[in-house]
Image (tube, rainbow, N blue to C red):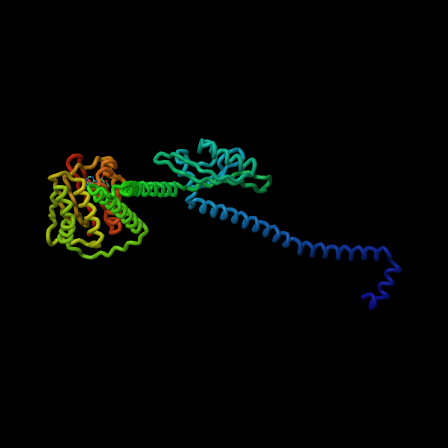
Amino acid sequence: LSIAANDFVFRFTIHDSRFTIHLFWFFIGLIGGLAAGWLLAVSLPRQKSQNESLQIAADVQKKQIVSERLLLTSVTANLREGVVVVNENMLVTSANLAAQYIFSHVQPPLEGKRLTDLTRNLSVHNAFVAALDAAKFSEIKVETRGDAEKRIFDLRVAPLRFQSEAEIRAAIGVFYDITRLEQLERVRQEFLSNVSHELRTPLTAILAFVETLEDGAISDEANNLRFLGVIRKNAERMRRLINDILELSAIEAGKIIVKKTRVKLAPLVAEIVESLSAKAQANQVVIKNQVEPNVEVFADADRLAQMLTNLIDNAVKFNRPNGTITICAAAENNRFLISVADTGEGIAHEDTERIFQRFYRVDRARAAANETVGGTGLGLAIVKHLARLQGGEVSVVSTLGKGSTFTIELPK
Ligand code: ADP
């Protein structure tokens, strides 16, 4: 433009410099306007989209926080361990369902309650204080006595510190229920001490008689065979005991496989009665097999024989002279009942549940003193386990002084 219209521009410049100035400002204004318009056109939508994306990011973050919280709540809600979070004022800020169950005496929700409202246990309190004040981890054993039963917990308390707008101090406590573990441990210890005790008694007798024989009684012809007899009886007792323990532990370990078939009951009972007839005669007890000849049960024949032998053997042992034992069978709904009734001393009501426990004997002293009566205390525990293994149960009804009836219940 400037080359082509050189003269024209020149002329204007010469004759009206003010107009040139105006023109200059006009162009400046035009360019400025155009630039501002362009800038506005470019920057406004960007700013708008920037705001929008900030908003979206905030929404996403909010949603993420909510879903994380939900996830955390549902994770802790489904935990079997009780989880309690306490803030620096010793107030509960979060607690899961299991915690609510542990502190069931406290009106829900636990949130907002003081830790002392949940428990007065000083060591729990101290563990949380140590976590809050000294950032210390602790692990303690806690016992709670709820409405129903005593429960034992392994409590782990850890400090929680994180930076939000200000530093937040809190402590998390996880209550791990070890009641069952403790029970099992107690049962194991009891079992060990019972086994040692049961083995020690016959072993002491054996050693005592061996020493007596060694000290010269071996030449005492009037007594030496009797002493040997006592040694043999005690050794047999030890063998019975060890066999029963092994049997019981095999059942409990699931090593016994039951093979159920149709079993003719009457001949099975007859065989057992036959095998115990010498013992029954010695105890002046009559055994009556009242099972109908055509009765069949669906069971593992060997295991059923073992159960009935234990029950009939007990009925002989704990009977009285001229007593009787009656074995009957009956079908009832979808169950099959086999009962062994005796006319013995009977069992006190408070002992009827406990006799199925391992090593429990009603009259320990009497049983130990009487070598023929003295069993292992494991017979009924074996019967119970074998019955359950076949989907059944065993129970007893007894009247002191009149006798007892043990019933094996099997699915039809
Ligand atoms: P064991 O017979 O070896 O002592 P069991 O487990 O078979 O062990 O029985 C546990 C206890 O239950 C016995 O010591 C006895 O006190 C009691 N008991 C079992 N059967 C009878 C019964 N028929 N009559 C009375 N008491 C019984």
